[in-house]
Length: 373
Image (cartoon, rainbow, N blue to C red; front, side, top):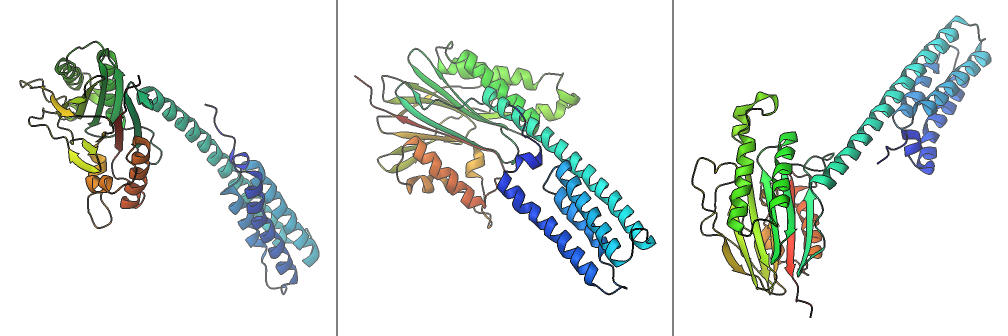
Protein backbone atom coordinates (compact mmCIF):
# COMPACT_ATOMS: atom_id res chain seq x y z
CA UNK A 1 0.00 0.00 0.00
CA UNK A 2 1.50 3.31 -1.04
CA UNK A 3 2.06 5.95 1.64
CA UNK A 4 -0.03 9.05 1.68
CA UNK A 5 1.13 12.31 0.21
CA UNK A 6 2.64 15.09 2.31
CA UNK A 7 0.35 16.89 4.66
CA UNK A 8 -0.38 19.87 2.40
CA UNK A 9 -1.42 17.33 -0.29
CA UNK A 10 -3.00 14.97 2.24
CA UNK A 11 -5.57 17.55 3.21
CA UNK A 12 -8.30 18.14 0.66
CA UNK A 13 -8.04 21.38 -1.28
CA UNK A 14 -11.00 23.17 0.27
CA UNK A 15 -10.07 22.59 3.97
CA UNK A 16 -6.47 23.58 3.21
CA UNK A 17 -7.59 26.83 1.62
CA UNK A 18 -9.83 27.53 4.59
CA UNK A 19 -6.97 26.95 7.03
CA UNK A 20 -4.56 29.10 5.01
CA UNK A 21 -6.98 32.00 5.31
CA UNK A 22 -6.12 32.24 9.00
CA UNK A 23 -2.35 33.02 8.73
CA UNK A 24 -2.91 35.24 5.66
CA UNK A 25 -5.56 37.23 7.53
CA UNK A 26 -3.21 37.55 10.52
CA UNK A 27 -0.47 38.95 8.29
CA UNK A 28 -2.86 41.51 6.83
CA UNK A 29 -4.23 42.54 10.24
CA UNK A 30 -0.78 42.84 11.86
CA UNK A 31 0.58 44.82 8.90
CA UNK A 32 -2.25 47.35 8.90
CA UNK A 33 -2.23 47.65 12.70
CA UNK A 34 1.55 48.22 12.81
CA UNK A 35 1.42 50.90 10.09
CA UNK A 36 -1.38 52.74 11.89
CA UNK A 37 0.15 52.38 15.38
CA UNK A 38 2.05 55.22 17.10
CA UNK A 39 5.80 55.43 16.40
CA UNK A 40 6.66 53.93 19.80
CA UNK A 41 4.53 50.80 19.17
CA UNK A 42 5.95 47.94 17.06
CA UNK A 43 3.71 44.99 16.18
CA UNK A 44 6.02 43.46 13.57
CA UNK A 45 7.36 40.71 15.91
CA UNK A 46 3.86 39.18 15.89
CA UNK A 47 4.39 38.29 12.22
CA UNK A 48 6.24 35.17 13.39
CA UNK A 49 2.87 33.68 14.40
CA UNK A 50 1.44 33.05 10.86
CA UNK A 51 4.28 30.74 9.63
CA UNK A 52 4.27 28.95 13.01
CA UNK A 53 0.51 28.31 12.70
CA UNK A 54 0.91 27.13 9.10
CA UNK A 55 3.58 24.60 10.12
CA UNK A 56 1.01 22.86 12.34
CA UNK A 57 -1.16 21.73 9.41
CA UNK A 58 0.72 22.27 6.12
CA UNK A 59 3.91 21.05 4.52
CA UNK A 60 7.28 22.83 4.32
CA UNK A 61 6.63 24.51 0.97
CA UNK A 62 3.38 26.08 2.11
CA UNK A 63 5.00 27.11 5.40
CA UNK A 64 7.92 28.69 3.54
CA UNK A 65 5.49 30.66 1.33
CA UNK A 66 3.65 32.02 4.37
CA UNK A 67 7.02 32.87 5.96
CA UNK A 68 8.09 34.73 2.83
CA UNK A 69 4.78 36.61 2.84
CA UNK A 70 5.36 37.59 6.48
CA UNK A 71 8.87 38.84 5.66
CA UNK A 72 7.46 40.86 2.75
CA UNK A 73 4.85 42.36 5.08
CA UNK A 74 7.60 43.32 7.54
CA UNK A 75 9.51 45.00 4.70
CA UNK A 76 6.39 46.96 3.74
CA UNK A 77 5.97 48.09 7.35
CA UNK A 78 9.61 49.25 7.44
CA UNK A 79 9.31 51.15 4.16
CA UNK A 80 6.10 52.91 5.22
CA UNK A 81 7.08 53.75 8.80
CA UNK A 82 10.80 54.57 8.43
CA UNK A 83 13.04 52.84 5.86
CA UNK A 84 14.34 49.39 4.99
CA UNK A 85 17.77 50.23 6.41
CA UNK A 86 16.36 51.24 9.79
CA UNK A 87 18.24 49.22 12.46
CA UNK A 88 15.10 48.19 14.37
CA UNK A 89 13.25 46.95 11.30
CA UNK A 90 16.37 45.36 9.84
CA UNK A 91 16.78 43.18 12.94
CA UNK A 92 13.06 42.37 12.88
CA UNK A 93 13.31 41.23 9.25
CA UNK A 94 16.41 39.11 9.95
CA UNK A 95 14.76 37.53 13.00
CA UNK A 96 11.60 36.81 11.05
CA UNK A 97 13.62 35.16 8.26
CA UNK A 98 15.40 32.91 10.78
CA UNK A 99 12.17 31.99 12.59
CA UNK A 100 10.41 31.21 9.30
CA UNK A 101 13.28 28.95 8.27
CA UNK A 102 13.11 27.20 11.66
CA UNK A 103 9.38 26.47 11.54
CA UNK A 104 9.74 25.35 7.91
CA UNK A 105 12.30 22.78 9.00
CA UNK A 106 9.89 21.62 11.73
CA UNK A 107 7.16 21.24 9.12
CA UNK A 108 9.49 19.15 6.95
CA UNK A 109 10.37 16.92 9.92
CA UNK A 110 6.70 16.48 10.85
CA UNK A 111 5.87 15.59 7.26
CA UNK A 112 8.65 12.98 7.24
CA UNK A 113 7.35 11.43 10.46
CA UNK A 114 3.83 11.32 9.00
CA UNK A 115 5.16 9.41 5.99
CA UNK A 116 6.86 6.92 8.30
CA UNK A 117 3.67 6.52 10.35
CA UNK A 118 1.66 5.95 7.17
CA UNK A 119 4.10 3.24 6.08
CA UNK A 120 3.89 1.59 9.50
CA UNK A 121 0.11 1.62 9.32
CA UNK A 122 0.31 -0.01 5.91
CA UNK A 123 2.56 -2.75 7.30
CA UNK A 124 0.20 -3.24 10.27
CA UNK A 125 -2.77 -3.55 7.94
CA UNK A 126 -0.94 -6.10 5.81
CA UNK A 127 0.06 -8.04 8.94
CA UNK A 128 -3.53 -8.07 10.12
CA UNK A 129 -4.75 -9.43 6.80
CA UNK A 130 -2.13 -12.20 6.91
CA UNK A 131 -2.26 -13.15 10.59
CA UNK A 132 -5.87 -12.41 11.49
CA UNK A 133 -7.74 -13.14 8.28
CA UNK A 134 -11.36 -11.95 8.20
CA UNK A 135 -13.77 -14.84 8.48
CA UNK A 136 -15.96 -15.45 5.42
CA UNK A 137 -19.60 -14.54 5.73
CA UNK A 138 -20.73 -18.08 4.92
CA UNK A 139 -18.99 -21.32 5.91
CA UNK A 140 -20.96 -24.40 4.93
CA UNK A 141 -24.35 -24.18 6.66
CA UNK A 142 -23.11 -21.42 8.97
CA UNK A 143 -23.48 -17.68 8.60
CA UNK A 144 -20.54 -15.99 10.33
CA UNK A 145 -19.52 -12.45 11.34
CA UNK A 146 -16.39 -11.36 13.19
CA UNK A 147 -14.95 -8.15 14.60
CA UNK A 148 -11.69 -7.11 16.24
CA UNK A 149 -11.54 -3.99 18.41
CA UNK A 150 -7.99 -2.89 19.28
CA UNK A 151 -7.39 -1.02 22.52
CA UNK A 152 -4.53 0.98 20.99
CA UNK A 153 -5.74 3.55 18.47
CA UNK A 154 -2.94 2.86 15.98
CA UNK A 155 -2.93 -0.90 16.48
CA UNK A 156 -4.49 -3.25 13.95
CA UNK A 157 -3.89 -6.52 15.76
CA UNK A 158 -2.97 -7.63 19.26
CA UNK A 159 -3.23 -10.73 21.43
CA UNK A 160 -6.84 -11.66 20.63
CA UNK A 161 -7.40 -14.14 17.82
CA UNK A 162 -9.98 -16.13 15.91
CA UNK A 163 -9.99 -18.45 12.90
CA UNK A 164 -12.16 -20.99 11.13
CA UNK A 165 -11.39 -24.11 9.10
CA UNK A 166 -13.51 -26.51 7.10
CA UNK A 167 -13.28 -30.26 7.61
CA UNK A 168 -14.90 -33.16 5.80
CA UNK A 169 -17.78 -33.26 8.28
CA UNK A 170 -18.17 -29.67 9.41
CA UNK A 171 -16.51 -26.46 10.56
CA UNK A 172 -14.03 -25.79 13.33
CA UNK A 173 -13.67 -22.39 14.93
CA UNK A 174 -11.21 -21.10 17.52
CA UNK A 175 -11.22 -17.89 19.52
CA UNK A 176 -8.49 -17.03 21.99
CA UNK A 177 -6.78 -14.41 24.08
CA UNK A 178 -3.03 -14.27 24.69
CA UNK A 179 -1.94 -13.15 28.13
CA UNK A 180 0.08 -9.97 27.73
CA UNK A 181 0.39 -7.27 25.09
CA UNK A 182 2.78 -5.99 22.49
CA UNK A 183 4.74 -7.86 19.84
CA UNK A 184 5.15 -10.99 21.98
CA UNK A 185 1.37 -11.34 22.23
CA UNK A 186 1.05 -10.87 18.47
CA UNK A 187 3.70 -13.55 17.92
CA UNK A 188 1.93 -16.02 20.23
CA UNK A 189 -1.39 -15.32 18.50
CA UNK A 190 0.20 -15.91 15.09
CA UNK A 191 1.72 -19.17 16.36
CA UNK A 192 -1.63 -20.54 17.55
CA UNK A 193 -3.45 -19.41 14.41
CA UNK A 194 -0.85 -21.05 12.19
CA UNK A 195 -1.03 -24.30 14.16
CA UNK A 196 -4.83 -24.30 14.03
CA UNK A 197 -5.02 -23.64 10.29
CA UNK A 198 -2.45 -26.32 9.60
CA UNK A 199 -3.97 -29.04 11.77
CA UNK A 200 -7.72 -28.34 12.00
CA UNK A 201 -8.55 -30.29 8.84
CA UNK A 202 -6.04 -33.09 9.55
CA UNK A 203 -6.93 -33.93 13.15
CA UNK A 204 -10.07 -36.05 12.96
CA UNK A 205 -10.68 -35.82 16.71
CA UNK A 206 -11.30 -32.46 18.38
CA UNK A 207 -9.47 -33.56 21.53
CA UNK A 208 -6.40 -34.46 19.49
CA UNK A 209 -6.51 -31.07 17.78
CA UNK A 210 -6.60 -29.17 21.08
CA UNK A 211 -3.83 -31.36 22.50
CA UNK A 212 -1.74 -30.54 19.45
CA UNK A 213 -2.40 -26.81 19.88
CA UNK A 214 -1.49 -27.01 23.56
CA UNK A 215 1.76 -28.79 22.77
CA UNK A 216 2.65 -26.27 20.09
CA UNK A 217 2.07 -23.31 22.39
CA UNK A 218 3.87 -24.91 25.33
CA UNK A 219 6.96 -25.75 23.29
CA UNK A 220 7.20 -22.17 22.03
CA UNK A 221 6.64 -20.53 25.41
CA UNK A 222 9.35 -22.68 26.94
CA UNK A 223 11.83 -21.88 24.18
CA UNK A 224 15.12 -20.79 25.82
CA UNK A 225 15.76 -18.49 22.89
CA UNK A 226 12.87 -16.22 23.85
CA UNK A 227 13.14 -12.57 22.77
CA UNK A 228 15.53 -10.49 24.86
CA UNK A 229 16.29 -13.55 26.98
CA UNK A 230 13.31 -12.85 29.24
CA UNK A 231 12.57 -16.51 29.91
CA UNK A 232 10.90 -15.85 33.24
CA UNK A 233 8.32 -13.52 31.71
CA UNK A 234 7.76 -15.87 28.77
CA UNK A 235 7.24 -18.78 31.15
CA UNK A 236 4.25 -17.00 32.66
CA UNK A 237 2.53 -16.60 29.27
CA UNK A 238 -0.51 -18.62 28.24
CA UNK A 239 -3.48 -18.49 25.89
CA UNK A 240 -7.12 -18.96 26.85
CA UNK A 241 -9.13 -20.43 24.00
CA UNK A 242 -12.46 -21.91 23.05
CA UNK A 243 -12.46 -24.46 20.21
CA UNK A 244 -15.71 -25.46 18.52
CA UNK A 245 -16.53 -28.26 16.10
CA UNK A 246 -19.86 -27.74 14.32
CA UNK A 247 -21.02 -30.75 12.26
CA UNK A 248 -22.86 -30.00 9.05
CA UNK A 249 -25.51 -32.71 9.43
CA UNK A 250 -26.20 -32.66 13.17
CA UNK A 251 -27.93 -29.94 15.24
CA UNK A 252 -25.01 -29.93 17.66
CA UNK A 253 -21.76 -28.19 18.43
CA UNK A 254 -18.83 -29.67 20.33
CA UNK A 255 -16.93 -27.31 22.60
CA UNK A 256 -13.62 -27.47 24.45
CA UNK A 257 -12.89 -24.50 26.70
CA UNK A 258 -9.33 -23.86 27.77
CA UNK A 259 -9.93 -21.29 30.50
CA UNK A 260 -11.92 -19.08 28.10
CA UNK A 261 -15.18 -17.22 28.85
CA UNK A 262 -18.20 -19.37 27.94
CA UNK A 263 -19.96 -18.63 24.64
CA UNK A 264 -23.48 -17.25 24.56
CA UNK A 265 -26.30 -19.11 22.84
CA UNK A 266 -29.21 -17.04 21.49
CA UNK A 267 -32.31 -19.14 20.86
CA UNK A 268 -35.86 -17.84 20.38
CA UNK A 269 -35.00 -14.56 22.06
CA UNK A 270 -33.44 -16.22 25.11
CA UNK A 271 -29.73 -16.01 25.97
CA UNK A 272 -27.86 -18.73 27.86
CA UNK A 273 -24.24 -19.59 28.63
CA UNK A 274 -22.60 -22.65 27.10
CA UNK A 275 -20.65 -23.58 30.22
CA UNK A 276 -18.61 -26.76 30.09
CA UNK A 277 -18.56 -28.90 33.22
CA UNK A 278 -14.83 -29.59 33.09
CA UNK A 279 -12.88 -26.73 31.46
CA UNK A 280 -9.25 -27.41 30.59
CA UNK A 281 -6.29 -25.29 31.59
CA UNK A 282 -5.26 -22.49 29.22
CA UNK A 283 -2.94 -23.48 26.39
CA UNK A 284 0.67 -23.22 27.48
CA UNK A 285 -0.03 -24.45 31.02
CA UNK A 286 -0.77 -28.08 30.19
CA UNK A 287 2.69 -29.46 29.46
CA UNK A 288 3.52 -30.42 33.07
CA UNK A 289 0.03 -31.74 33.94
CA UNK A 290 -2.25 -34.37 32.49
CA UNK A 291 -4.81 -32.28 30.60
CA UNK A 292 -8.31 -33.50 29.86
CA UNK A 293 -9.41 -32.17 26.49
CA UNK A 294 -12.82 -33.81 26.39
CA UNK A 295 -15.40 -31.96 24.27
CA UNK A 296 -18.94 -31.34 25.47
CA UNK A 297 -21.91 -31.29 23.13
CA UNK A 298 -24.62 -28.61 23.02
CA UNK A 299 -27.71 -28.33 20.88
CA UNK A 300 -27.20 -25.94 17.98
CA UNK A 301 -30.17 -25.98 15.63
CA UNK A 302 -31.39 -23.86 12.72
CA UNK A 303 -31.84 -20.22 13.70
CA UNK A 304 -29.63 -20.48 16.77
CA UNK A 305 -26.80 -17.95 17.14
CA UNK A 306 -23.62 -18.57 19.14
CA UNK A 307 -21.54 -15.59 20.24
CA UNK A 308 -17.85 -16.12 20.98
CA UNK A 309 -15.92 -13.31 22.64
CA UNK A 310 -12.76 -12.50 24.57
CA UNK A 311 -12.52 -11.09 28.07
CA UNK A 312 -11.86 -7.62 26.67
CA UNK A 313 -15.63 -7.46 26.08
CA UNK A 314 -16.96 -8.59 29.46
CA UNK A 315 -14.24 -6.81 31.43
CA UNK A 316 -14.81 -3.45 29.75
CA UNK A 317 -15.82 -0.88 32.39
CA UNK A 318 -17.73 2.36 32.24
CA UNK A 319 -16.82 5.54 34.15
CA UNK A 320 -18.31 4.05 37.33
CA UNK A 321 -16.30 0.83 37.07
CA UNK A 322 -19.30 -1.29 36.00
CA UNK A 323 -18.48 -4.26 33.77
CA UNK A 324 -20.18 -4.51 30.40
CA UNK A 325 -23.32 -6.70 30.81
CA UNK A 326 -22.89 -8.66 27.60
CA UNK A 327 -25.65 -11.26 28.08
CA UNK A 328 -28.14 -8.60 29.11
CA UNK A 329 -27.33 -6.40 26.13
CA UNK A 330 -27.52 -9.32 23.69
CA UNK A 331 -30.94 -10.28 25.03
CA UNK A 332 -32.24 -6.75 24.51
CA UNK A 333 -31.00 -6.29 20.96
CA UNK A 334 -33.34 -6.58 17.99
CA UNK A 335 -32.32 -8.79 15.11
CA UNK A 336 -29.98 -11.57 16.15
CA UNK A 337 -28.37 -12.39 12.80
CA UNK A 338 -24.55 -12.31 13.12
CA UNK A 339 -23.89 -9.09 11.21
CA UNK A 340 -26.58 -7.06 12.95
CA UNK A 341 -25.67 -8.50 16.34
CA UNK A 342 -22.00 -7.52 16.13
CA UNK A 343 -22.82 -4.10 14.68
CA UNK A 344 -25.09 -3.33 17.63
CA UNK A 345 -22.63 -4.77 20.15
CA UNK A 346 -19.69 -2.74 18.85
CA UNK A 347 -21.62 0.52 19.07
CA UNK A 348 -23.03 -0.34 22.48
CA UNK A 349 -19.67 -1.47 23.87
CA UNK A 350 -17.91 1.71 22.74
CA UNK A 351 -20.73 3.76 24.22
CA UNK A 352 -20.38 1.89 27.52
CA UNK A 353 -16.64 2.58 27.85
CA UNK A 354 -16.81 6.14 26.57
CA UNK A 355 -15.14 5.37 23.26
CA UNK A 356 -11.87 3.86 24.50
CA UNK A 357 -11.29 0.20 25.39
CA UNK A 358 -8.73 -0.72 28.04
CA UNK A 359 -8.04 -4.10 26.41
CA UNK A 360 -8.36 -5.64 22.96
CA UNK A 361 -11.70 -7.29 22.24
CA UNK A 362 -12.77 -9.82 19.63
CA UNK A 363 -16.17 -11.31 18.86
CA UNK A 364 -17.41 -14.00 16.48
CA UNK A 365 -21.12 -14.64 15.89
CA UNK A 366 -22.26 -17.90 14.25
CA UNK A 367 -25.75 -18.76 13.02
CA UNK A 368 -26.81 -22.16 11.73
CA UNK A 369 -28.78 -21.80 8.51
CA UNK A 370 -31.19 -24.35 7.05
CA UNK A 371 -29.48 -26.77 4.69
CA UNK A 372 -30.10 -26.10 1.02
CA UNK A 373 -31.83 -28.91 -0.86
